[in-house]
Image (cartoon, rainbow, N blue to C red; front, side, top):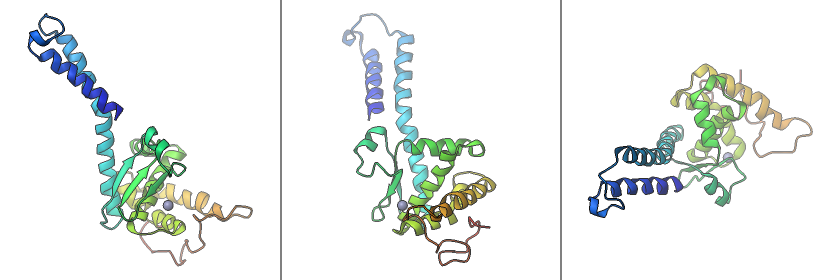
Length: 216
Ligand SMILES: [Zn+2]
């Protein structure tokens, strides 16, 4: 909202400059450098929310594809949105009924960073794709967290492909996630977590035998 307000302000300055001289604060003719400066600032301020909107629309199309055609929308929370979100402690959340996925600040930025350089992404940037796929599985209709995570891992490579990430990188990342994160939730001494189940694994009940499974 702040970006839109700033953009509107600079556009107003442009229009004021272009109005008849009698309406300007100064009587001189239009001063091109000033006009170009405020026009550039107006476009620059509008670019931020427009870029986010395009990214959200792109993610929504992929989420809907992953959710077997169910309608999905994606919202990247700003810092202000996150502070007002009752689920602010979760990196993301999804509403099964409406198909609305919300990613908290700064997870959309991390996902965007991951998509721009998947080969050299940091651990949290790589995890952002799994988070997004996990939320898409909720939209697909799954409420159980462990099963949702299991379904997301089995569609990680597909999600990556839909977003333009090379399959070999996604395959490496999701296998690493399965081994180092998912299975680690069952290590002795670890508190029980709703995000783990022994039903998820090679040949287990939740193995959907999809291509590019996260296990060998
Ligand atoms: Zn979840």
